[in-house]
Image 1 (cartoon, rainbow, N blue to C red):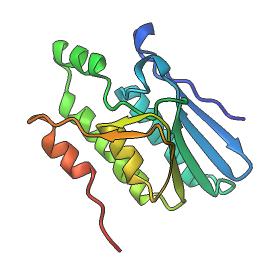
Image 2: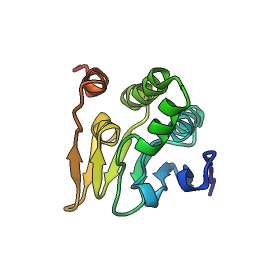
Image 3: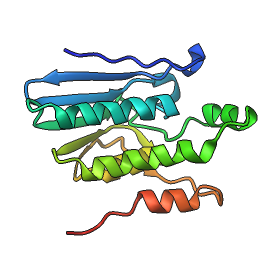
Image 4: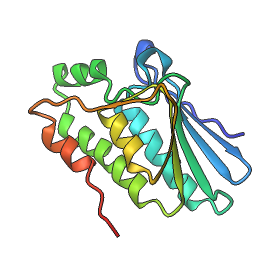
Length: 163
């Protein structure tokens, strides 16, 4: 079992990603239960790295993307986003990395299954809908939060080219 932990600057915004190999299947699990697996830039970058490593690893034949039971992903962590804005951070480049993650899932050469339990909202819904295969529970909720500033980003991330 391989485990990767990514910690944000503040303990209450700890961003965890657990990567585990089970035979030829790589499990990639968001593990931030206190925030329903909300995404920070650190977590998005860790997901990029995990997907790139899986792509390069010949023994990995498929991936399963999930969250801790009861929550797939509640989208962008609004506390992190607010802190970035308050500190004069560059939010648009960060959101572009969120978008690039969705595109990476679409273009990955290996099959990806999204195991969705609980909410998948905003960018979390993008991740759930970007993969060609999904496993949903009866408790699954998918939704998009619409606001003028993010409308173009959300519209772009849900685009999929048909073969």
